[in-house]
Image (cartoon, rainbow, N blue to C red; front, side):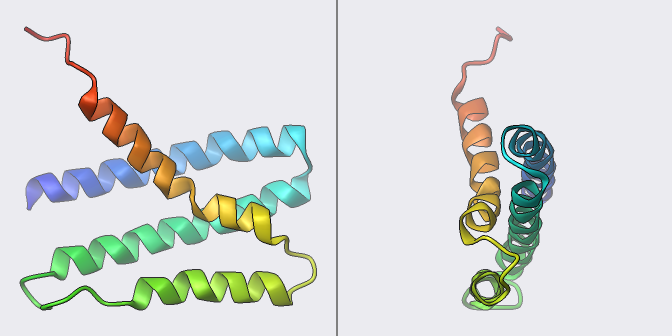
Length: 117
């Protein structure tokens, strides 16, 4: 379980770092409004990642199957984005997917051969 908690922490930190970097770029190249929409989606993605990690951590001990509560987070975000006129769906959706970038970074890091021999 210790390795799982380390992985969980690493993915969370990587997601937050990617969020900060991308937020600055979006703000610079587009606008603060779009960047804030992206940030809303990215923060929701972090919450989604935490809920998913909690459900996976409970799998086998307390639960026999993984819950579907994490899909409610995404659905709620998209529903709010479509109903609130100040929000833009695409930046929010792409922000939500930032945690996927953290997964890709982790995968590439683990596939790279280490220099220690």
